[in-house]
Image 1: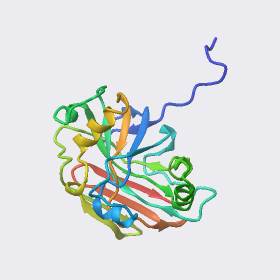
Image 2 (image 1 turned 60 degrees about the vertical axis):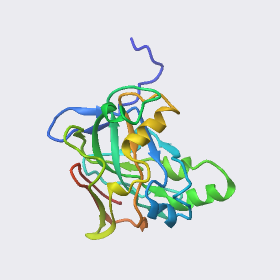
Image 3 (image 1 turned 90 degrees about the vertical axis):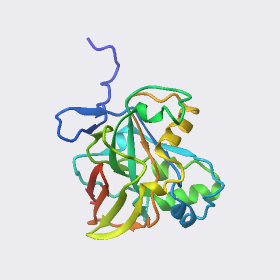
Image 4 (image 1 turned 90 degrees about the horizontal axis):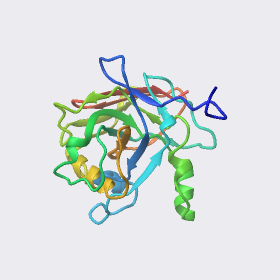
Length: 228
């Protein structure tokens, strides 16, 4: 006899490259405006802005190159290509020096955004949740273990229908991966299964049904989805 009055939800998970095992996802945190050029693109001053965060539900994941349905209530769906960090060891008030030791692995991901809904929320001072945390808003590629990955540098790129639309380098992150982990861990206790999307470079733009998105992070891997 079940201890629950309804069936528990299926555990959201990200595949692991070269393995039949999966990485269970607890929470998805996202860093806003963490590349200078993108901050300028979005009308902010990157030299004075400390890190800030928003979240997506774990079941927003799209994995295994699956299609992403175009979301309802929006006419401006934007792509945001990102490096994703998977937390493997719990911690609070983590120092920058110790932060890398809390990482299980990395993957390439897309922070898909209903930009029109987000922009309206900004105008009215309301939360961004429905602009960022909607169904299927987090396509991700396979995770690779952290060992051997240098998250301080490396090409990050996104192609839409074969054309490069975002291209930068991880070295241009305003707040590095260890700094983000440390900062966030002073706000919440990080736990195994948490994912951190570390921010997108400039070049964000709208996509439409039929568009094929192919992202790449050097030394980490790829993410691929088609908008349907």
